[in-house]
Length: 216
Image (tube, rainbow, N blue to C red; front, side, top):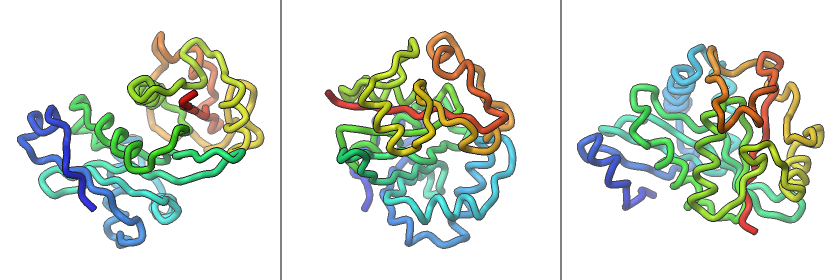
């Protein structure tokens, strides 16, 4: 199923060549998944095990592809979870080719991922301050409260959902050692907006923070 409406600003920047496609992950060949793995590696700045990407794609309920000039230049994986009786749209991997950064395409991709699997609650997990900023923006634009808030405050209901997903989650919604490593070669440093949430993560140990957005 292809989307009919691509953001006007994205068309303008890229001469009308952008499409967002919703695809069944089961339809992708291992060769196509290898292309996704290359995008992941470019974003992380280092190689990523291909088998890891294959497993993530095969486990996802929703695969969203960003197509530019008929080539795959970005993708997102989402899973449908039920946590504490709450339907949750879990945002897994989400990447845009680094050559296409600063064109608002990550927001375009995330908006479609949200609209295609509609729930009042969304969730993701990250070491990257830029992902927090993008997730917070999506929440603000869709009438959701985000936890942790930019000042580090935690919403109790969100913490309960985070712990239903990852029982060892701390009271700051941090998952210690969950990735087993720092995912990126050079993770962006926290800025003023993200320093309370991301500033104390031990990324080298694989720590990450769970982000929850809820309509209340």
